[in-house]
Image (cartoon, rainbow, N blue to C red):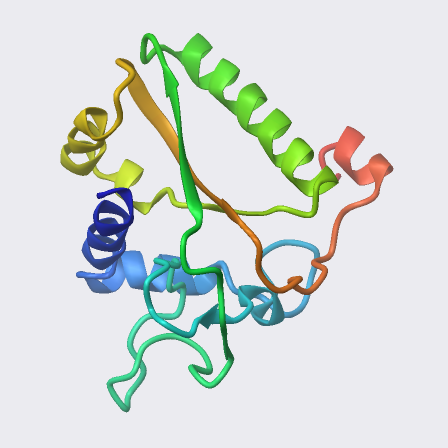
Length: 167
């Protein structure tokens, strides 16, 4: 259910020209900000794993980058649901802290993590996920955990840039 909701969220995001144009601006191969096109990584060869498509439809009708860059992902990944009791700003902060902990722990065990957040960007899809897990609460993030190919490194700012806000 979570994967299907994430696919619907991705499709909804690319319905109009403005959201698609915004997503395309996030892909930058020069400068310190943005997502390098090389970091988009391979796609799930089976098509079962939803992945955000930042580039949208191409003139030939196909979607995104190079579809030949597909790799086998594990057939049964774990989808973790991060929830909070309430949906206040303090809960969002705590969810972010918990997500940071999960990602660091996963990395230390060579577990790959993908954030499936497209469904969370649409209130109707986000609320529909609330009934998809046994625990009550507000869904803050869906996390795919499993094993897959190592992705390429991406540029990072140094400590000085982080501390002074890049000024």
